[in-house]
Length: 442
View 1 (cartoon, rainbow, N blue to C red):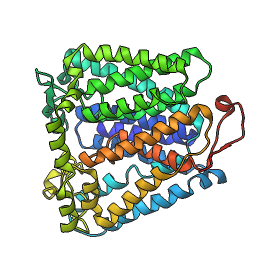
View 2: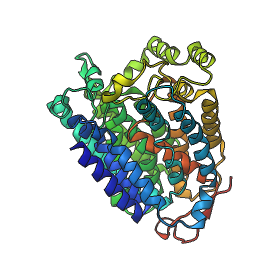
View 3: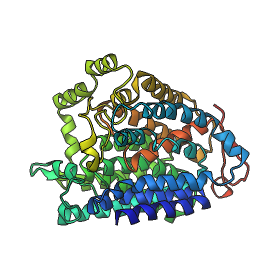
View 4: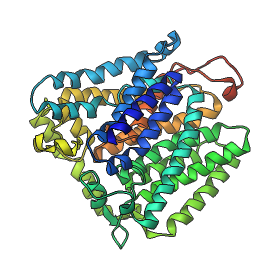
């Protein structure tokens, strides 16, 4: 069954990517939302690569199409950074430090999502609006599944096996020590993190609509459902990220007073739902300053510098703590080294030179000043920038930033969008009332 799911993910995404970028991304996200629960119920090893297959189908389907010169111009900077970020991982893969299969897993964790930079740089505003509607439906499906897990138990949907061990170890919600909710994802953090990552799309698309009450209400309700789903997951970091994004939207000067009132009413309803049950309030443990300080010190401390000092050229692909090794390959892997810090993981995988390239890329992509954009989309791009910045900031106290399925897709797509936002953002007549592209001067 795992093989069939992977083959179907590849074929469907390939076919739809040849139709258009938004179509391909819709299929990719659908596979990503179903990935966790399919993999848990069919742990045959082949299902582990279903999202990889979907990404391969997306890349082959989209890049095999003839692209306009303008599209190539849009991605010139993204192409440069794509080559820079891929070069060292492929070089390290040629150095036989560990078992070849483990090194292949390490290579996968560093390069799998990177080509999405180019796709993000080629996104048009109409694509963003379409993706917002798609993730609204996917989020509603995931939240409904999460509610079912609360009512009937996670065990009804996720069998206990080697794939789901993390899910059943996460029993720290409320006084009853209930399980965190994974919905259809591989973990509660993947559930909450992915939903939080969709908020810039939902809020940005909702804020730009000037007509169509039904669609505006649809996106506003979807934003409320998505926010509630983040709280439902029990993961704390996604809650903080969602709250910051919502606050940024609420206090944005680009949002009209009427929409701010509507957003406030939606937030009040979500607050009422969250306050109705202790299992939605795990984020309140962040009030324990001693716990937060201990958690931060455990990831951002002198040990990080010691790791770089002791291993300036890394320890080889697949060896760093936080690199997800499939259960069927664990016997081939050496004991992991590292701390709960994504930057430490990068440094251990591809050395200090690789870490420098990544840090330079992050600062460069975030420092590019956004100029004039279509008025309704200013909030969207600001929220995209904020999401990317906060995601990398929290990477200092956790791992998985580059390997979360499908959450990392949003990070790389958004980053590509920021890179291209200094050039030309094509706008359809449906969105802007004109067919000519609008210039964004950096």
